[in-house]
Length: 182
Length: 155
Image (tube, rainbow over all chains, first blue to last red):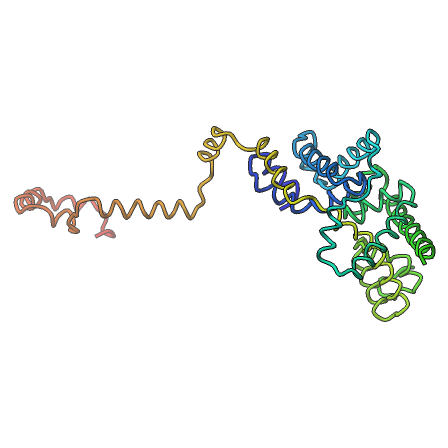
């Protein structure tokens, strides 16, 4: 069943349709939001707000499809607003989640993973905002070029070029970070 | 001219590795990239490196995972907004279409119920059920002239 059919069923009162939508999008959407606001609690609040806004917004024509693009458009706008009004985006990643992972990994695995994570985080931060955005939508949001084009309101070819450029920039930054670490 | 049966060169594949990774290539090109990767070690290694870098981007997904109670909290909010009222549920129950097999099963049950509920009746025809005096009346009213009105073919 398509996303749009699920939204329609939910609006008709079938709450189980929400569970399926949540299953499909919670990892991708939460990852996208959390990566931007860098605060677990704020990300959860935003996630909830975005989901409810999209489900309640009857101005969107469900017959056109493209639920994913619509969801991430709302998410992008909400995240930008949150970042503008709140400077807490520079907080460290939630320590509780690190501790939880630490309990399930050996010290060697953990140090390697954290080192890799720090390197990667450094490389990502060196990218331009446009490159970071397109990578988040592609890699974390798992959107297609067409869906990203709708979110960013640019031609599909532009999205493709941006993704290629962002990945090239990321790999270059990763190389530099690794040289710096080494 | 880019014929679909022409093998890709390393340059062709290099330009398409990212789109290949994201499954954004047309099916014909995807097959040609896959065939090239299967026989070219350098391109296969380049693809593995790209794959590793992009997969590493998802590493933070472990940290960026919603709390276990978020689903329940959000579901509660959704229920408050979208749950049907009692009137809506009753209305839907009344308007709900009945599947054909259910209708057939119901009809069979009704017929069976009628079969057992109604008193047993003789299987005989009308004449057999007649009393001797009724037969006498029929014989007396018989008029062979009526048969003459019928065509010879019928007889």
